[in-house]
Image (cartoon, rainbow, N blue to C red; front, top):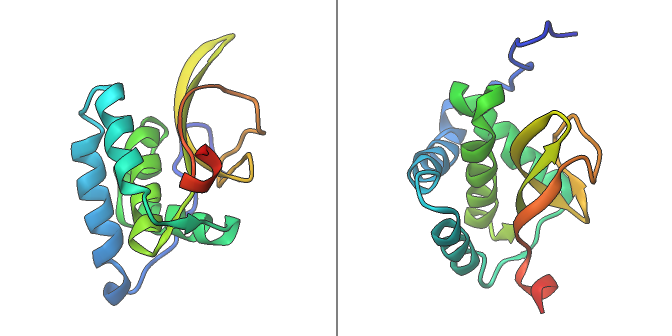
Length: 142
């Protein structure tokens, strides 16, 4: 069990498996600076042609992102972590649903990825945060 505020246990990736997650984190940190409308537009374009990610694929991507980035592993790293997870999935030919939302009591904003309506690798259940933006798999958007 981790202490409050402590980082979760992180996977250790072999050196040869780090370049793609590092690239995804780098790009995610740039994209996280965009305004929400522009970010959503970029992610909508990036998801084109991808097949839906499985829960295992999305969790593997999230674990790899957290393994290579302390910022993404921290509590305040949800936006770059979720973007990097979606990007890493896309680099591997898949796309999870990327989401951002809020809860009101107490107020908190969060970003995450989900598969089949369930958050991937998150400590909260589906519906805990009210979705504000989502970029689903292309076939789900139709």
